[in-house]
View 1 (tube, helix red, strand yellow):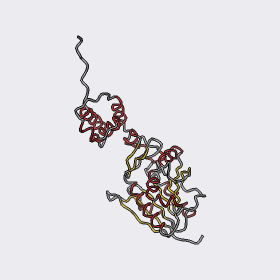
View 2: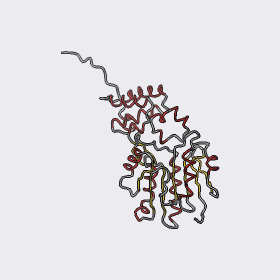
View 3: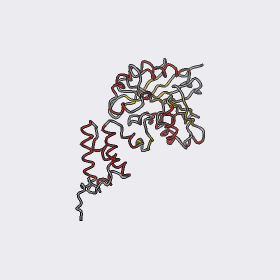
View 4: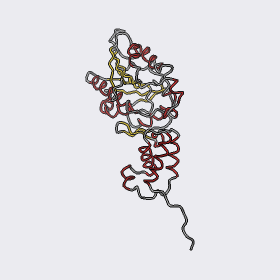
Length: 293
């Protein structure tokens, strides 16, 4: 009889511990969480199951090892899993578009409030510029499903990137949202009442460093030029001739950019700022004056 000299199988708990050490050494800010989430994804199990079965053998760790290698190289967990949990939604994610951030929930909240306020007075046309994955448009579509169904709300989601548009169309499939290619607000935008925009606002120099997820996400979704405000500046300059009288623009910005944008606001516009949970100014609401055209 030939003795069994095969190496003992690694347990689920030990695999997580080993992966955590690898990710910590690679500089992951959340190595244990990353390891658990990725193993759960590979096995099709949640974290509670992993904890309850920590002593069981991991029968085939090759896929997990490959995922940990990619995460150690900096690839975002959302790209490895193929989705991002955002506002209790599962948003499909890959390298075609930026990964939805928690701070962008503020932009969605501001859009909900603005659209709701305007619907009380009549039909509303809302246009999301640079929709990316379509996460904000999807949240709006779900929050205002009845208004979209009855035609009281028209919602357009646009982007200049063909890849982002295809991803947004996948996430918005089944919802009455028009997905279209556009460079900011086109001249035939139809004068929307509400414009929502999470434009690239990272400086070119910071993007060049390619730290963390910036090394994997599409540059076109990140690079805002020398000061991060090239596209914001263009949008604010073009908006008065392309939106409805008294329209509202809702912009997500980077830390420290609010005062510059306040100065860029069109003449006569009112400007309000919404801070994030860290107290940083994050969303700017710009309401344009009502003028006789």
